[in-house]
Each structure stands twice: as C-alpha cells, then as structure tokens.
Length: 496
Image (cartoon, rainbow, N blue to C red):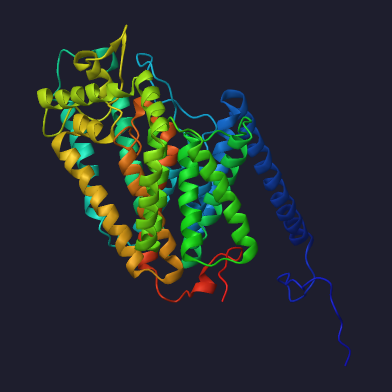
C-alpha cells in the first residue's frame, strides 16, 4: 500500500471532501495577513509612544522606564537577582530624577537610583508576599528595634504637624522635606528586611562579595590615580571601608584559591590606601580602624590584643601627628559640634521632648535655636546621628536608635555563631561595619544620613550597613544543604 506525504494538513470542507474551499483559503489568508498586520501595528504604536515620550519628556525617563520594566520582570522571576544587582548599583550616584524639592529650600538634591531602585525592590518583594500568601518575616534581634524606630519616625512626623514652635522660620518648614527625611529612615529599614528575607540560598549570599569587591577596586583605581571618576561615589572613603570589610572578612574566614587571594589582597590594599590617605578626616579614620579591629577580634582575641597594644605604642610616638590633626580640626571648626549638640537638645526639650521636632525639621529650627553663626549662616544638622535623632525624634527616637545598635550587634554575633562555616564572613563583616559607622556617627549622620547634609547621596553608602546586616540574618537562616565548596562563588571558591 502506498503512503502519500502531504505538505499541508487536509481540511474538511463540509461536503465530505478534504479539499479546502475558496472561502476557507481566503479566511486563512486574511488570518495570516491580519496577524502580521497586528504585529506591524503594535510596533508602530510602540515606536510612536516612545517617540512621544522622547519629545514631550526627558529621554532619560523613557529609557529608565524601559530599563525598570525589564529589571522588574527579571526581579519578579528571580528576586535574589534584584538584591544582588542593588549591591552594585547603590554606591553609584548617577542619573537624573524627579526633584523632591521646593523653591523655598536652599539645599538641593533629587532622588537617586539608590533610593528609587530600593523602593522598587521593596514593592516587588511586598507584592510577592501578598500574592503568594507568604508573609512570614525571618526572625532576628533587629526586627523589633528597627520596626520600633520606623514607628517612632512616623509618629514624630505626624506629631510635628500639630506640635511645633510657631516662631520658627516658616519658609523652610516644608512637609515635602519632612517626608523625604522620614523616607530615608524607612528605606534603610526596608533594606535590612529585603536582604534578610530575599537571600535564601548560600550561593547568593556569598555572591555579594563580587559587586562590593568590584566597587572597591573601582574606587581605589580612580582615587589613587587622582582622576575623575566615570560615575561618582559619595564619600569614597566609606565606600572603600565597606569594600575592605567584605574582602578582609572573606580572606580571614574563607580560603580562596591562590589567584583569587592575590586579586583580593591587591583590592584590599587599594581600599586601605584610600581610607587612610586623609589623616585629617577623623570620622573616616575611626570607621576604617574599628572595622578592621572588629574583624581581627572575630578571628583571634590574642591577635586583637597584640594589635591594640601596638597601636597604643604607635600613638605615643605619633604625638606630632595627633597635634596636627587637632589643629586642623580646630581650624575647620570641628569643635563647634559641642555647641550644636547643645542646640539639638534645646530644640527637642523646648518643643516636644518625647517625639522631638519631627524628621527633617532641624534645619528650620536652627534659625531660632542655632547658637553658632557665620554671618547669616548656621549649621543645618547636628553633625551627630544621636543628637540629630534626639532633636528630631526625641527621647523615644534616641532610645530606638540605641536599641537598633544593640540589636544589630547581637544579630551579627548570633549569625556568626550559628551560620554555616562558609557564611560566617558576612556576619563578621556586618558587625564590623555597624560598629565602625556607629562610632563615627558621633561626629556625623552616617548611619541614617540627614537630607540637609547631602543625605540622599550619603544614603548610597550608609545603606550597606543594613543590607549587610540583612545578609547576615539570611546566612543565619539558610538551610544546611550548601556545603563550603558548593556554596561559594566559583572565582573565590575555597580550597579543600
């Protein structure tokens, strides 16, 4: 029996035959051409829409909109990818953004990618929790302190709309700046919960070394060569400090291959050179020194004691250096801080000791309570996170901030004690970064930067405190399925 092959399937024409009728062929042709026409029409409409956006609006926003759409699809499919990408993007102060500013306010800034992308990731994370019904938050010693701090921020913001000093300079008492200041606190809190709950695989947690080490190398190259950076990073000393914490902790608690060790040691040396090149900036010196000492303490108490003794001996012989640093600080007016800390206390005490004057209001209150003036200018912030929070959020805010620091240290220690061996490095790095920034925040607003003191820019690096603590919590809570060699990133995988 012969079997005939047919290039097209038979169609039933309704009369018992398999031949397609002219009407059917016409319908098929119209269907095919219609599909093609619809595709062409969709392309034309999309092109027209993009062209319209480009003409009517800044092309930057059209491009960013398309990037965010693609990024959102990738994040929805693999949320860990979004968290890891944020580690690489956050330190870079680039691009334009809608202004959260007023003509009556004399300090500038828009919203940077560090804030926009973090807010976007938080929305994606929240939407996933709602849609999947998995709203459980992983436990940690930081959950209650951070949530309490967030509640105090919102309560202080609301209270400041009803309890305020009528004699303050109303031109700067703006609701938009108050909301922006509160938003920086809430975004920092959100960064912790994001990484703590999204990073559920040891490979993703360990992979955070990649973007942070790359940013450290980037900063080291441009700063040590004294050439303009392609994309600026706010407070490059702090960026180098965070990178040094990651790399030094990785080298102390993991055993990467020889080639990877060499690469990391070179980057670490560059980061340390950047961090220690400015001996007149006390805040930077305190941060990097305490970060390194904390990591050494995690590794060996004996070595830590030896290093401290050596530093004390060196300090005795370095008296001329300290005198020069003291003179430089005096010339720059650094000792004015004692006066403005007193001003901060007076603001809260004479307005609302419990909840303070409200987030973002220090600047406007400084026109009445400022005791140190340079002509028509005075200090716009307290240059001290503790004094700033005490002024703007009162005793409750200061208590919540101290609770956050204690909870953060407990979180790091708990994670270091209970995490898998290959993940202990992130717990040590998180604790060291928190200790360093908490100490230097006595001389600046570095844990929770204030918007009047370039806070939107400083957030780009301070957010790593909370991102890293969240990653430490994730390391504490991941399952024991990943062993050392399998969990580590391939490039820096440990030797057997």
